[in-house]
Amino acid sequence: MDDDTLQGLLAEVYAGCPWVDLDRLLREVRDPAAPWSETSRFFFNTPGAATLAAVDPTLWLSREVERELVPGERLALGFDGSQSHDATALVGCTADGWLFPVKIIERPPKVDDWRVDRSKVQRAVEWMFENYEIVWLYADPWRWRDELEAWDARWPDRIIEVPTNSARRMPEVVDRFRTALQEGRVTHDGDDDLQRHMLNARLRKVGRDEDGRGRYTLEKAGPGRLIDACVASVLAYEAATQIGEPEPEVVPFVMYA
Image 1 (tube, helix red, strand yellow):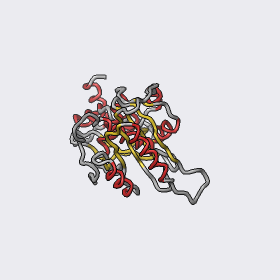
Image 2 (cartoon, rainbow, N blue to C red):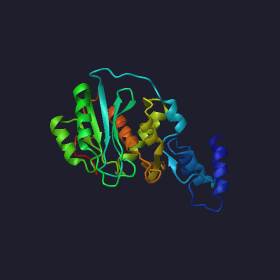
Image 3 (cartoon, one colour):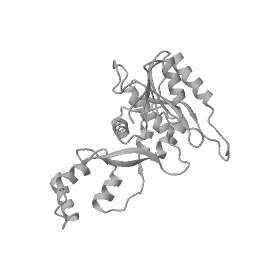
Image 4 (spheres, rainbow, N blue to C red):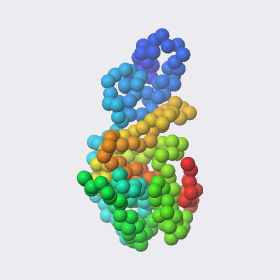
């Protein structure tokens, strides 16, 4: 419907609330980054899911593309690590936005005393740097700071620390990824584990921008619903957008809080 009709409906919903800025509400409803389930539930009092999927399953499935990497190809990597409870994921991304998992390590079921084998991650990172031109590696530093420092010493000026719990920076990264996926600039290799992590991810609202549009980070749908490969994919795509740039938009290694 057109804006006048939509604003008329908003005026009915918010009748008796003269302090409400209907123009601002209209901008929020029209925000393409806002999930419709949240919009309809929040602004029009319609039933909706309590959790918001970060990625539409049908859209994700439609973005599967067959592709082969070329030895020495310029790539970006995204890394989200854990110590024992969650998964650890290293995901690659080509300059044209094609995602593929390099290594995904998950805690075995019904195993209490378990720690991720960090040597497997180290070997995966080394193999990627030896066989491809890794331009940037964007990594969440939580519990992996020693490894990031060692990687930065070995491959200087290519390791970018990205704290994924940053409510200041991460919403921009998530929004850029979701928009690119919607517009077809993000594709993937169809890996089942990557898909599971991607579809487990939910959006968590962390405020609004200066135009009143929602800002979102990522969270699990529930206990055991791993999303680490999704987070690594978002970081990998963010890094891939900088391929070809002389300097990244962020400061190498020690980054924002």
